[in-house]
Image (cartoon, rainbow, N blue to C red; front, side):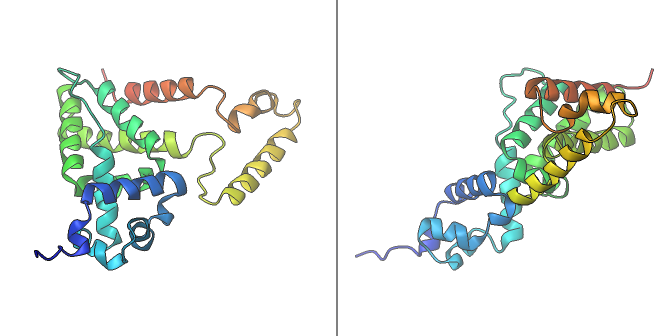
Length: 216
């Protein structure tokens, strides 16, 4: 009788990453622990070290797993709008990973390929190597900001703290005098929640694309 392989070898790496990503999407990045993932598979955390030596390696793998969702196969020649729209889609699908993208994106093969494509498009538009590199960083940070700093999202993981901060912001804006602050009182609601999510992201993308145009 052939002995069964160790539990760690029987775990499928892709499936482990899918579970970890689902946990991050539902409960935030702090909830992604080797212990919780192991519990999902009914194994001990040690079984996961076959695939990830520590949580740092797991986070790198999660970023790569998310970036693998970027699909530009339908575009014969992807332009800048197509690429950053695809990046934004991934960030919106997995907002818990947004803040760790800048430091980890180029630690992955998928991130390196994406950065090469993005910088190449900016160079083709006429930017110098330095400008293209800097603009690629500005674009990524701008996309992350759209997702993590949208109105009504104070950037705090704890739901009760988030509501406390939002309530305080609401009370402050609603207390303003219309005579002293006519513009803020007129637009107060727009600082508290998204009236039109589609329009918000459309305008955000347009702003970033316009900023990336070469100076005349």
